[in-house]
Figure (cartoon, rainbow, N blue to C red):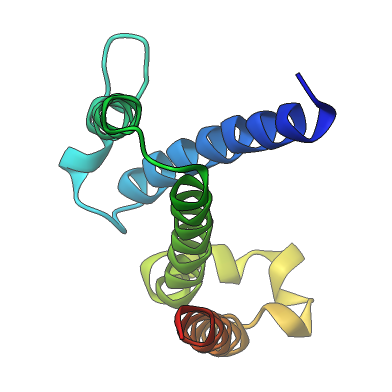
Amino acid sequence: MPAPALAGITTVIGCLAVYIRLLKAATTDGILPRWVGRENRNGEPIYVLLVLYAASVATVFLNIPLQVLASGVTLAVVTMFILVTMVGIRLPSQFSEVFERDAVRVNRYLSPRIVRNASAVALAIIEKATAMGIK
């Protein structure tokens, strides 16, 4: 197997692992509905894994071209960034006690207003970059 293909496959596997954990954390924190993060006895999110499994099986049986798969992975990564910025927007109001700790309070860049505004700006940049890429 050529090195670029192996690097691409391992990157996709790593992104999926991070994506699954991000969705699980978002459900635990109350950002997403609880049913999204429902776990099996091993602690893995059932519905997220079922969706990934169905998408994988459909990809194999439908013989989807590599370019479409690459754009799908890109969409997953952009979605992950969007979820992170959404968490940044809701974090100051959802978990205000985090911003009251001494380590956070002394850092002037971690005020709730700055975190919320920086997340909103990042979300706008992601939206603009995605819209430019679609055209």
